[in-house]
Image (cartoon, rainbow, N blue to C red; front, side, top):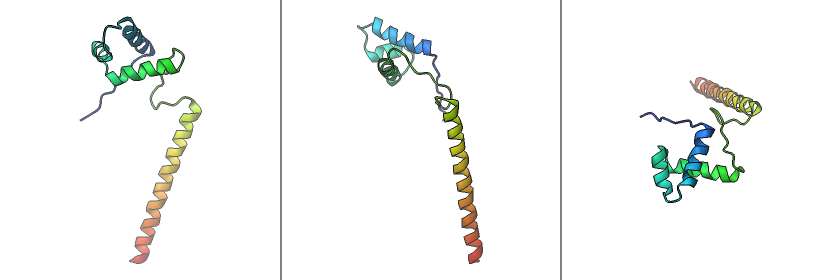
Amino acid sequence: MSSKRNHHSEQFKLDAINYRNEHPDLTQVECAKNLGIGVSTLAKWESQFRNNDGDIPVRGSGNYQSDDAKEIARLKRELRDAQDALDVLKKAINILEKS
């Protein structure tokens, strides 16, 4: 089973929060259903809106805040892969020495 993730624009998120605020008679569940999003998604956006002075952070794939963070993550993956390959080679040498 594949997971389908929807990526919503910042404007959609702000519109969803405005919709929620403009309809105090509706529950959060009803608002989320009307908008076609999950309740936890709407709750998260509302929390982000409150905690970021009316702004909702929107980041692209990988959720990296900067190019430096993206490069650091790439280098960490590369280092981890190299260490894993080295571990495999060490185990292979031990197995061959015992034979």
